[in-house]
Image (cartoon, rainbow, N blue to C red):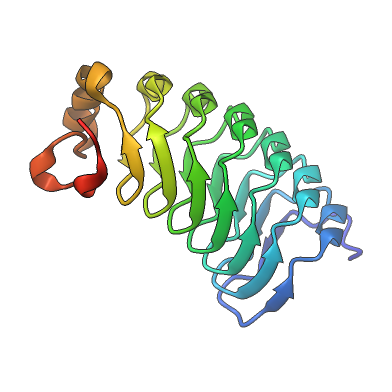
Length: 195
C-alpha cells in the first residue's frame, strides 16, 4: 500500500474477504478506517496498533477470530471502536483502558470471555459501552461506577454478577441516561445476573 497521505478509508458494505493485511500499518496518517460489513476473516492484525493517528476504527460485522490485539490500546486518539458481530474470543485487553479519548466501545456479539477489566473505569469520556452477548463472567467491576458520562450500558447475555454495592450510581445513570440497570422485571441482564 502506497498512500502515504491517506486519512480516510471506507471499505464497508462490500464482499471483501480473506485476512486484513498487516501492511495496513503503512497508512500512517489514517484517521478513519471502516472495513465493516464484509467477510474479512482471520485475526485482527496487531499492526493496526501502529496507526497512531486513528480516531475511528470499525471492523464490525466480519468473520474475524482470535483475540483483540493488546496493541489496540496504543491508539491514543481513538474515540470510537467497533468490533462487534465477529468471532473474537479471549479476554478484553486491559490495555483498552488507556484509550482516554474513547466515547464508544462496541464489543458485543462475540465470544469474549473472562472478566470485564477494571481498567475500563479509566475511560472517563465513555458514553456507550456495549458488551452484551458474549461469554463474560465474574463480578462487574466497581470502577464502572466512575464512568459519569456513560449513557448506554449493555451487559445482557453474559454470566456476570455484581452491582449490589454500587446500585445508587447505576440508578442515577438510569434516570439521567434513559436506560435501566438492575431492574429484574426488565430482564435487562436476563436470568444470569446474580443478586
